[in-house]
Length: 191
Image (tube, rainbow, N blue to C red; front, side):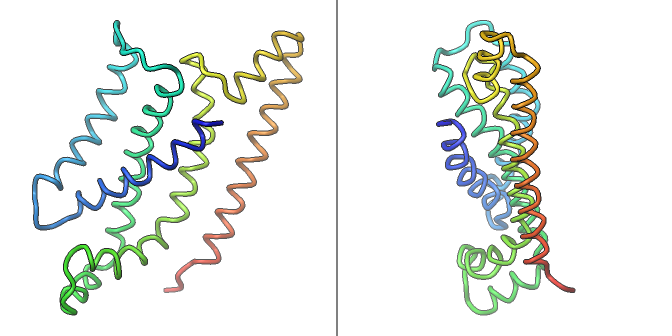
């Protein structure tokens, strides 16, 4: 349970800062760094961690937290970048015309509009994170699926326990998806 609560607190700020740096027009290197880091993380570091013969011993909790934070931050960075780019360029120019600097324009004009576009995708990614947390069994961490597996093996009730886990995952995912769909309809922009 600790992993599920800690990962969202870490991944969103990291993704938000990276996406803002990537979109900043004035400085080229900070803008290129997040794209390079994202590509590096997705393509090489994940595979390297899986095949490292002498990994650093940090424990299952920290290993899961770091992995989920870095992996999800990469996705949140892309979601936020796309949301910010969905706002018309004229909105940014109007902020500059009012005398606002880059950060003020982002904070007062662009991000409030972009957040409305990003919200459904951010919530959907959170549902995906909920489903992905069952992968911590690979590093021998116990989560809902792992606990059900231990009980199933102990009591010889494999079908019942895995069916229960499937129903719980389905109910939570379907319920959250329905909420996201309702929220999306409620905040839809009529154009």
